[in-house]
Structure formats: C-alpha cells, structure tokens
Length: 241
Image (cartoon, rainbow, N blue to C red; front, side):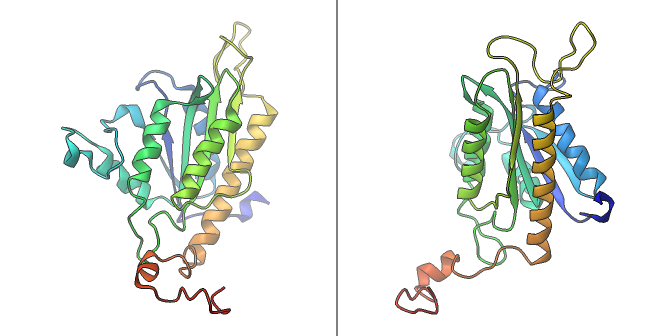
C-alpha cells in the first residue's frame, strides 16, 4: 500500500533545537532520523538544521543585524524555511518545558509573521507543521502543544496527530537512543513513540501534498491587504458570511 504513495516534489525541513552543538550526540536527532527516513523513502526531499551550529541571534525581527547584533545567520537559514512544504520543530524537554533554543526558533519564525506569500496571505499559509519531543521527564504534550499552537498561529496548517515523542522514567536516567549494558537501545522499540512518529510523518506528507496539489490554502477571507482596504469583508452581506 505504501508504495502507491509518491510525495516527490515536497520539501521538508527539520529544525533540531537540542542544547548540544555538533558533533556531540543529539538524542533528539535520533528521533528526527526516523521521520526523515520515512519521508525520504517516499520521495520527500529533506534537510535538517541543528540550530546551535549556527549564529542565530535572539529577537523577533527577520534580520537582527539591523537591531544591534553583529552576526545573524537566520536570514540565510530562513530561505530553507520558506522553501519547505513541511516544517518539524524538534527539541528536548527541560524543567517540563521546551528548550530555550526551541523558544528562540519560534520567535525567529514569528519575526516573519507579517510577511506575505504570492497570494497576499501570511507567508506560512499552505505549509504543514509538526513537532517531535524527547526527554526523561514529563512534558511531551505540553511542549508539543506550545509548538503546534505557535505554528498554527503564524499560518501553518496542522494535520491530525502532528506530534510525537519519547520520555523515559522520571528523574536522571538514559535518554532516547542510549545503549545499555545489555546492548539494547533505549526507546528504539517503544511502540507508542514509533507509532506516533510514523502517524505524524504520514499525516504531514498527506496534508502537504493536498495543499500543494490544490495551490495552497484558499486565498479568500484571509488577505490582510483586502482587510486593510475594506474590500470583500462586508459583514452585512450573507454571501460573505
């Protein structure tokens, strides 16, 4: 059945918000790898950005060099965001919440929330978004909720079951992908994680393809230019409502 699906032409970008720079092992990346391999197997062109490997300035403007920062790689990295049909924000849980890097990336995405696509819609319309979470403390749903709300608020479309994650026992302990003394790999055979990661990946591909095949999200009733001009927003007109 799966061989019948071809998602060639779609592009996906994973942003890994680990607190570790390369080449240090990222447990989050191991979970990203699962989703990435499924996508590539079915024709999606994928890319991964490990945020900490780049000089990304903190702030809510597209280019923070215009606001006092000497360096900011975000304007270059954002080109990959703009080209991607699918965006997956992946990161760890710390103190029950998303990492500071995850928060920074969301803020930089938000910096472009006033930009527009070729239709005049907000720039992220017509794109699908998802979330992957790792950690050894509770918080998968809380962290995913924050990411997915943020993505939909700035214009991304969120498919069903758009998040997945893994957490071990509460407190200090092995992380996802660690090798134990008996040779087993922590989390790799976790049915809940594998199922949800697979469902998220397929639903992202399905939604992204539906959006792309139909020319994106319909451009009616959601155009800032039309709203500002006061056109086709006649609240007294039953046809509009």
